[in-house]
Image (spheres, rainbow, N blue to C red):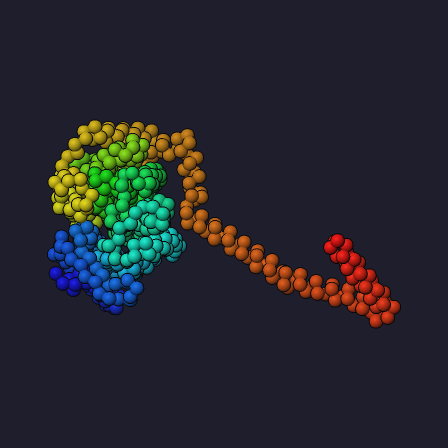
Amino acid sequence: MTPTVLLLAIAVPAAAGLLALLLPSRRTPWATSALAVLACAFELGLAIYIFPSDFAFAWPWIGFGIEFAFKLSRFSAFILLAIASFGFLVSMYLVVSMAKAPSSRRFHAWVLFTVALSAGAVLADNLVLFLVFWEGLLLTLFAMIVAGKTKPFATAIKAFVIVGLTDLALMLGVMLTGHLAGTLSMSAIRLPLDGLGAVAFLLLMIGAMGKSGAMPFHSWIPDAAIDAPTPFMALLPGSLEKLLGIYFLARVSLDFFVLTPESWVSPVLMSIGAATILLAVMMALVQKDYKRLLAYHAISQVGYMILGIGTALPVGIVGGLFHMVNNAIYKSSLFLTGGAVEKETGTTDLHQLGGLGRSMPVTMICFLVAAASISGVPPFNGFFSKELIYDGALERGWIFYAVALVGSFFTAASFLKLGHAAFFGKPSNAKRKVKEAPWPMLVPMILLAGLCVLFGVANSLPLERLIQPAVGAVMKHGHETFAGFPTNMMLVGLTIGVLALAVLNHAFGVRRSGKGIGAVDHIHHAPGLSSAYAFQATGALDPYRMLNWMAKAAARTLYGIDRAIDWIYSTLASKTALVTSSVLRRVHNGNVNRYVWWALAGAVAVLLAVLAMVGGGR
């Protein structure tokens, strides 16, 4: 393999994105779509061709240890293949979903740039070069949200600020890591988790969590679900950001630093993962909008990945990475079904949906498969990755396993509500004749739903050929495999029991409320939870709102200091000068007798001071 092959993975989609911006979209609206599909198809073919090769090269660049260095490992080749696959599917979906949108040409370009930058971040083997690609994704994130229709700028700025702050932490972590390691080569870094090494780890971890959308760096994602185009949600929060964020967290935890079950980092990661699972899924449970509900689940599923990696056990790490892939598959499929529903009905408000299964049967089937996968229903892919995470979590502490299991109950409950409200029951959107989505939108959904089945019943394919070889260093034995049906039947039985409870809960909720959308109202309005939900609805816990409040408080404080300084110089100083000059004018009035008395008084004062000094010396 030559360096040119790796560079093509970045250069081709980047060049296609630049060309898409230059094409005259009014005359040839199909040209941009065709260009995007062809470029992403080339990227996918290239990723398949180079998988699973090992190759590296480095060219001198800026100096000071900053090289133009790239490395293809089994892990990076695996992530690159996933990036190319999702890029291709989303580009195909875009052919119809944004065909008539005014921002279609620009959005295609941002998708291509995102694929190029993601490939660069995965292949980079120098921390500074990695940062160049990583930060470029912040710009495409902003640009794709702005392509929305409602209030995109406020949401885009919110995303830019939150992710930008985590990226700032990442930059500090990169500088500290490079200083401690004495090198910027990512493949040569190996540091202990103590002292400044611990600080460097935390900073890098914040950067990875911010990219993956873990709590508390998540609040822009539900807003983007409403304001940004649906393909954006499927591409970035749904798949690529999870792949990149968890990929980098795995590199930091497994390669850069020595993560062991005994280290203090392990329980920290597991606690963050458990909190993200539970808090985000509780918010997803009560949502009344199709895409906003999916957005909170996109956050919650990150918790399972962080929990698995945080166990520092082979079963948990493999499970976390397997779940990363599975989540990208079923979450992208779910967002694409949401986009199809929105295109055909004109809304994602669950109050205005219902009975869509009759008119959109293919979309409904794809939804059901993906929903079963994310809920952990056997034999779909989500079941197998979750069982691996459960196994690792239980070995580290029953509380982590319990939180993960409760999260699965609420996940299943919320998707039962969503599926019932949108695809079953009586049609609510009777004013508009609804039909099935066009085939360019259906094909990506069908392929992703098929992968949910394939990666479940044939989980040895992703586990033994993709994931386990990529993280072979954490395996206990070279022949060990986690493929096949879970061996811990107690955990499987508990999982099935929890899913059965979710079904019973749904039946109770529907019977009590009389409709699918009210299936979890009894949980929403339960004592204690009701007030907690009401408090959260005020936005008081939104970190972006907290940042705004702190910024405004700082601005008011600085403004007050500025006014005080201005008053001292403009008011106090001038008035003091006026009073002083007035007093001096009265004292120095030209009377000789008064001057003599002042001179005598001064002489007496000096004499008394001298006597006091002499007396003190004795």
